[in-house]
Amino acid sequence: MQWRASRSRRTIFHRVQSLPFGMTTPSPRKIIIAIDGPAGAGKSTIASRLARKLGYVNLESGAMYRALALKAIEWDVSFDDELALVQLAHNSRIQIEPSLGGNRVLLDGRDVSRRVREPDVTEAASRVSVHPGVRQWMVARQQEMGAGGGVVMEGRDIGTKVFPTAEVKIFLDADPVVREQRRLQQQNVQGAAAQAIAAELRERDRRDRTRASSPLVPAADALLLDSTKLSEDEVLRRVEELVQRKLSS
Image (cartoon, rainbow, N blue to C red; front, side, top):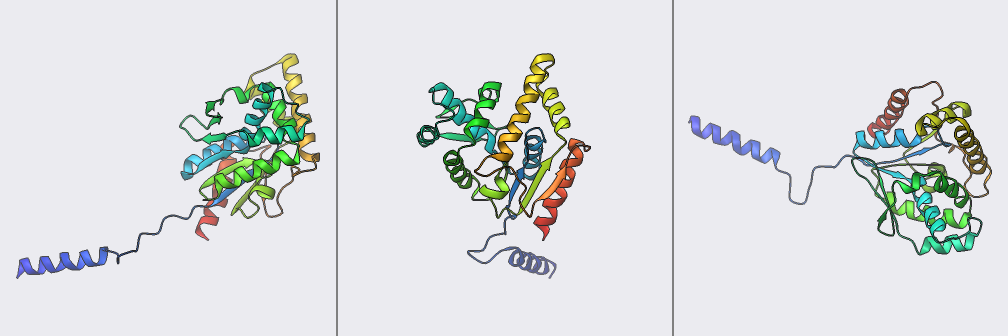
């Protein structure tokens, strides 16, 4: 009798645990998180840390513009020639590959992760990105990359243009002086070089906010987060709270 009772319990347990044929355990919902804001606001750092914590892919839209700008430098294409830049984009293969040490940027199969962070490419990317035709090509590629969800994408028009229906939208900003100080500390420069970087940051702000195509503005439904007096951990905590509320709704 004891053995039969034990076998009966095991049979019932097995039947409860088994799912009908064709059914699977639901997977966690994967959403799109858009983080926009000006240079030096902390977008890249927050996006990278958030993606790691969620197990999401971190897609840097700025790295894609940098890659195209690098190719324009190498091919001697004018940053003001929109048609030539669009043609160059159509003949380019730009990939963002997540890795433990951060995203790898591949241009036509070549790793240019370090090169695209250098000052001349940064300046070129700011000039290349103002052209509507270039932005149209980039937006289409970015939409393809994030279509399946499970991504944190940061940039300047993610919530307004690339993913206007993203479940979470954040506009991260900070006082211009604080943003300049952060950038100078990040690049560890002083003197004339520091003044040049500060001037470049102000010029990038002007271009981003005044360009005709997809200017830098918060999405109407974005959370506006001023990081001027917040630590990196405090910003991340507030963003995580918003994401968790969305995932549990």
